[in-house]
Length: 412
Image 1 (cartoon, rainbow, N blue to C red):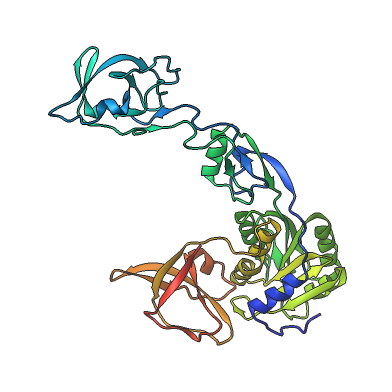
Image 2: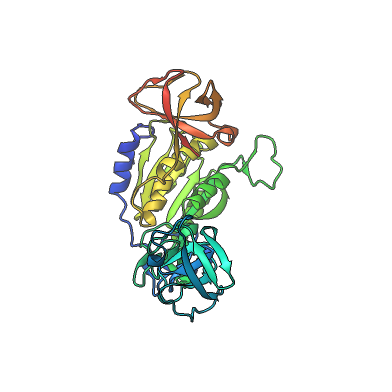
């Protein structure tokens, strides 16, 4: 076991953590397309059909042979005979010949022989069976050809893709109603502390409601994991050992909050070391908020001990837990994409050299510039995270940021 609170950098902590974990091949499961949002495709999903499977109009107008309209203008329109109409959802049984046109609606099937659609706005009705075309069209104009959107045999969703609404629509469009996705990593979440009670309880003297397990559960679900709450455990070795042993059997990753500092009642490190090898690998990283974090491995299953302070717990979960969940999902060790916004700092913020600082900020508009206004407050206050729209990260090599300095705000 490492010496307690021998602080190391985030990079050093990750290097030690990764060296001691061998990731199993992600398992897959079959889900309905309606349940696939945010899931990761476990295989290539290939279309068995063309989309559309017929030449389709994208405008209300007339299906024509484009060459019949070449040179048409208001002064010298092209005259075409209207030989029928294709209704929506019906087969186009009329064959087009030179000098002819067929009335068609948006989404209608182009008749054989047609290679373009003239918008109705560029036609004039001469009589019941004749139109004048006042603007030429090129072949393929105002239409979608068979297979132009998705071709038969084309990969609609590639393996490893995080499925968005547009992928769901594409799958439905080719008739895929169920798909194989990566099984969500199961993440055990438990809070420790004699002072912590469930949210539906009225806290007694010296007690507080459980915040962390709910906040961390939300983070886990947000990035594709399956949070499994194991409740609140007292600050004693036997109780924590019993719950963690159960979590080890039922989940892929174990997360506990509280019990990561060096208080005399904190037994998390001892329990982790007792459960399996190599045990605790890291105890403390140079990050603010969030210094007291435990990173351990129990017989190839990772364990993360987060601080009891909510802001610290969320920051450290963002650094270590979220990339771990993505790695277990087959996405590699990576942070999820998050939008950033360029802003100027609203006030100066000092930082200790050698420590990464996560400054919670709100955004404001001043004199035409976006400003990042620090939200000041202790790491034990969840409201500093609730009020924040994002964070500004001060690297370890810097000793702070000055008011008016340009920064990148990572948006929540």
